[in-house]
Image (tube, rainbow, N blue to C red; front, side, top):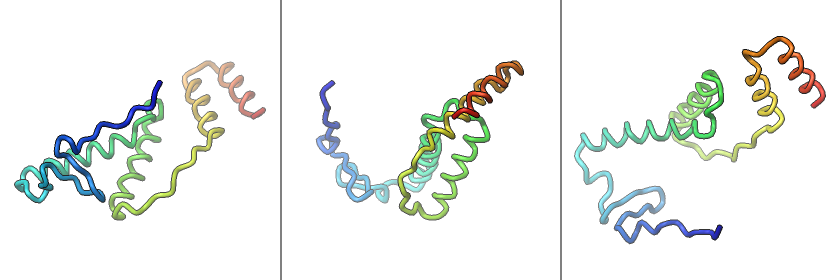
Length: 118
């Protein structure tokens, strides 16, 4: 598949420069307070739920930890983050254990045997 260039929104007068979004040269400050409140709440919801992308099979506790971390980052003023590295082995083990969480004792024993050999 050929590498497609992203759509150029500036052709529609929609720009984002240095983190500031403007439409037709006007930014969020040109909107009424009710609209800014709506956008703030909408943006918060989108930001928080996007953090869960790719975590569909995680447990509720794991998802809650992700949201707690995101909230703490927002409260801290959105400091620059280091790129997250994924511990593939730990993720694999967690996935295997979750897969047999409601399994038979034999299935659980088999998975623990596989994990022990990893």
